[in-house]
Amino acid sequence: MRQDLRAETLTIEGFGGDAIEAYFAQPLDDEPTGGVVVIHHMPGYDDSTKEIVRRFASQGYLAVCPNLYHREAPGASPDDAAATARSLGGVPDERLVGDVGGAATFLRSQAKSNGKIATIGYCSGGRQSVLAACSLPLDAAIDCYGAFVVESAPAEFPLKATSLIPLLPNLSCPLLGLFGAEDSYPSPEQTAVLKDELTKLNKTFTFHTYENAGHAFFSPDRPSYRTEAANEGWAAIWSFLSDTL
Image (cartoon, rainbow, N blue to C red; front, top):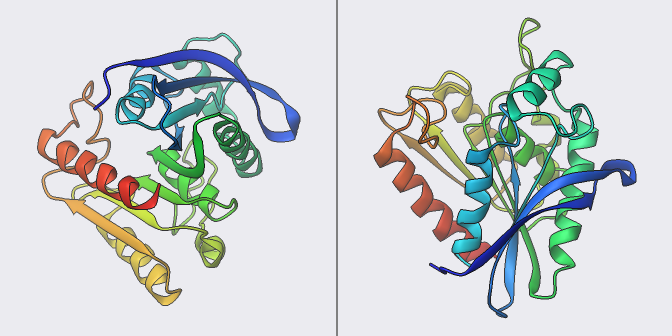
């Protein structure tokens, strides 16, 4: 783990050439390294997500999180911005892909980038990480309990999300999936469907499902946090990125 890093808020180019806010962290050494685009969860571009960005930098990676709600609520608190985004049905898929693509381009432009890029997302961001990997040339993707990958969101749900099964043939990279056995979104049954689809398509993937863990087991500031599952999940992430980036 590297102790010296720099983190800053800056502006990157997203979908359609839009200037959007992003949080960027990097280790303070000159070694070439891969980059990670962190896709925030539905609660938004918040302190816990920024801590995750810094965690990747502490492990030697370039990491950036684009503020997916910047257009709807520039300068707003994460809670207010998330509420605005939910009222609109979430982030449109096309725009998400453009924003993540812009973040990947930003990371590749850094002097010490080795050109390899991964995405990681939590909750709604887990689905969006899979979406990005099916839409962009990436080297790795991580799905942390992403809902509505194999089925569409119910009509009454605040998130407008359609199944990604039609896009799975385009998956461009290895996929790591981290899930809770007690989760409902996605349920173990839905995770099994995704596994079967990827197997049929001869895609490279590794899934871990943790017992006694439900949704958001990575979040230390929530009652859903599960220490053992989170620690094992982080170990799986570091191993996966070591192999792919």
